[in-house]
Image (cartoon, rainbow, N blue to C red; front, side):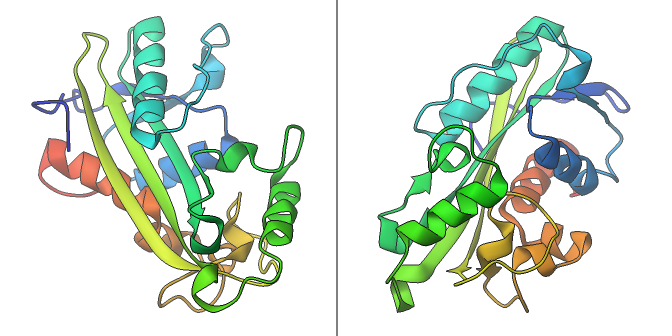
Length: 208
């Protein structure tokens, strides 16, 4: 955790999720379904623009949360995540959503990743998902939390659940790709689930 004492949203208050990614929004809402907070979509604030992402998860999450909190006057939850592959020296990392070039959808980025990993075997296929979440208050208070999920990259996509690189990522101890897991099983072990539960526990003393 960072950023001094943790800001505490009021019970039942509205918090704007600072993402334009519908998959992230769905997951955040599912993970925090038991929390007494209304998670508003950024689509409800069409004039709010997210900052350009850089090369650091924490800086990106904080920048997004701060921009949305200041623009809306509401608490805002920022999220930045990425996939780090051992054989690619930690790439694509914070550039995961832009990997392979502009204009690609999730399937296109997965295909680009598998091409980049052609010929990699064993330990070179080890990978981890990383997520940093940041909660920003309009008054400027901010707190962050980080979550990780270790695993490996599969040779071919499997399953049709989740989003992003889920079809080719198999978490340690999981029976199949992330995209093959039920929502509850995925959220229990995922990087985003771990980060959000850590963040919420800092505020309420228990995870949702």
